[in-house]
Length: 551
Image (cartoon, rainbow, N blue to C red; front, side, top):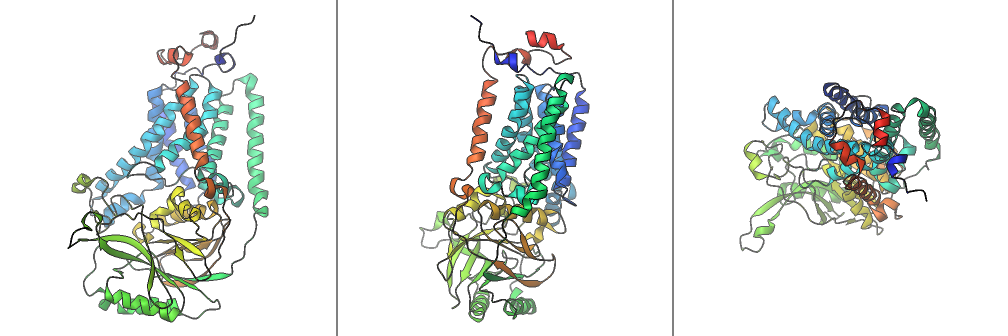
């Protein structure tokens, strides 16, 4: 009877090579810096389709510690070149020196780098079992660690995920309706892995692997070229008056702010009420760019009169002052600030409040209070803002409901989904991106928010203090963008939808599937007696194939 063959007979371990570690690290740095070109400047998505492949090429036959270092260095360069505005914001608005701002950015990059380094280490472990297994498992592992990045306690930062450049294509973007952004990240990572697998093919297998690569590239390019023609067109039955105030960012506000800014307030009220060719039935102001609080009689009077004159609901970003949860039972409860959105009805009465749940760490609150001694505030309320607790919906005439999420919350797919799953027929994102200055951040923010509309098949109104103010239809088309850094108003088309996408109904099912597959794959490399364990103890050198396959 023929003995049962080990799977290493079919998938032999991938041997190591004598490539210098320094060369691997340089290639990893280049791959990270090049990848950032898909998120800045002209946003060429092509870089995202091969830069991770370059990273895989240098880690698949590296020693495990070197593989981890390569993943870490890749992320350092990617973060430094794709989000350098973080250091600028900390220096300009946070009271830090330029060096201090970059030091904090280095800490952020290090946290993400540890995740990418762990991804690289896991891929290398799989490669010690089989090159094919490593390349097949790489996209599952990549999504797993992106998903982990989105769920880190307190300091999660799922900004510029791998799938976002591909979302620029309307046909590819529609995949997110099923899988969320995770499906696009998987598709891009899978093509990168296929590229690495083909590049490392021995001569006898090169032709068949190249055939797979060409076929995959042809399929993707065909979908990108022809697919957008089949994306349905939509029409809108409603318009919202969106006001972009373009207030400069201020660290503090004097007591006479309303008096000294009376002309500014008059101008944005005129923009709010200006006649137009559209019958706008919703007025939207952005996340609070000034000391707007409904507890302040001056603002409350202005806002109520504006809603009455507009004769339709009015949504605005404000700072709400409420009793702190820990002191609510006391007779003299201390008031705490919440970053909120409120809705006023046509009679000027406040009928809805949403308190921002996912606050910006170190900007709106201190996740680790001891760090306050080192890190200055990006907001004058740092450490003071409290988190909301309810994904509440606002109701409009006609029985429709909408969910209003604030600024930074737009980068969290699972959190925005909660509004649609709870019954929101429209999504509204109010933001103040003025803190970012003239950087790539506002456009990066818009590109991520746009995917939230498609994931949930909802119209999205995005209203900001200084740009980009737009509406997005349920298929990702952007309408009537206001230019940045101008004070203006625009009537944005929108409509309501009550159907549920697969992603809205089942949530992050695809990401959890990737987590499960990744766990099984990595756990399999720790089985006692397998060749992977033996190879971990062997020096990584140029091992003759005959010796490897017979071990």
